[in-house]
Length: 139
Image 1 (cartoon, rainbow, N blue to C red):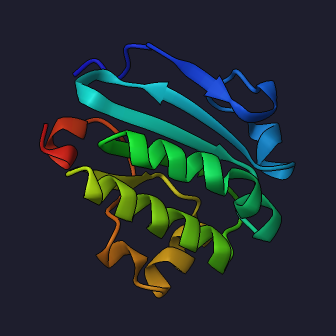
Image 2 (cartoon, helix red, strand yellow; image 1 turned 30 degrees about the vertical axis):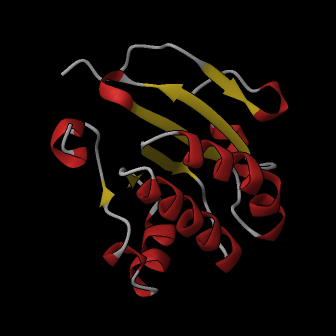
């Protein structure tokens, strides 16, 4: 499967690269990219702590409310707090209301541990690679 056919890419703070390791140490950023088969990839970069969650919450919720299937890349998120988990759950509810789903992609080990310990993985699927998105999303 061809993973991405770039249609649109936007980012907070003018960030244009899909991955930016330096962003994981700095303020939270959000990058949106349309993939094939109606899947929207949202890449979060930086700490999803209180400040980070507040920075992206309204944009993330808006995207989730407008799209059906969201793939949320957490590979550049080194930390997640309860408010960050709330942002993800709110987005999942919005996509479910559209008949779709939200899937978490490749969280760092400490972030994945928090998500699994809090049983978020029972509500939001967590995958380690994006090779078979059609099966994950059922498209």
